Image (cartoon, rainbow, N blue to C red; front, side):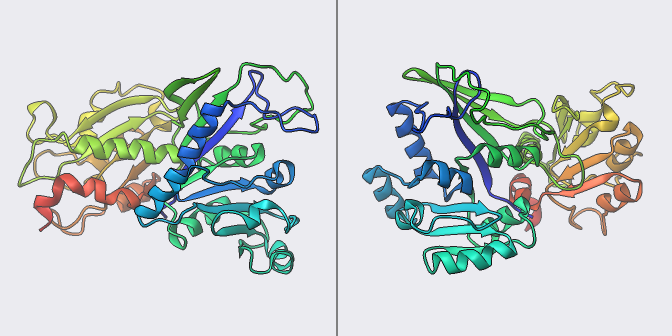
Length: 377
């Protein structure tokens, strides 16, 4: 099920705190960075904060630049992004500025919280119950499918950031580090204890902004089951981009593949017709670069822009069988193989029957199809 691109945004002290324990909010950022945040807000479809952030900070969550708001309107978008919050209890102040400034508001809650919020808020916000407990994946699916949110900015608090990272639902972390120490063990921290699916993050950018530093990270570790994690979207997108490197052909698809270890380490990549071999397949090219005795293979994931083949005329062993022989137990693909060259292909079915976990990330299907348009009519 497609989800929005989830961008986590936060500012911390050098010792990892979001705030101190004083009565006033600790300002960690700088004026120039506040302007950067305003620019990011203007670029997204929705901004989400937790109920605790509303209670503690009383934010308005606006795009302050008139020029940026005008640009949104000129592009046919609402003047302000959708403002979203989430609460299990429904215990929120109906007089908070969050409800009475900016554009449209939406609150996700439990069935019990929805009854309370409907009484408290009246028509100030849309209320969406998620069932007896909060479900982040269901929340993100609703934002994408019902509200059309393609890009979501999450501004806190620490519990929200922690849950999204632990569940593998964050695509990017934008972290501003301020040159000061809080030093109080009772002060709130950005991330809480637990197991994180993101693995070792990849640093994709740094930027000095006055006296603070912006660090941009992406998760790298694959998901653990058939449900794709945020890192899965990154690696499958990479596979789809590799497909564009294939020499064009009228008799075979252009496919890209990446093999990634459980800790997020890239083991190999390949694409169809790589290295002048007119019949090599993407998964075949990638797996051939890995030592068959590599102990990381059983925990690895193969990302292929097209479902691995089960029948082929060019070589005796199809890619699904090569994956099984390598011991890989997880595959993520964007596009089920059409009947263009092979009738009733079912690589996913063959792999699943052999105990391999297969996930199809259909939101990237258009990217996988792009270098194959000439074959699709």
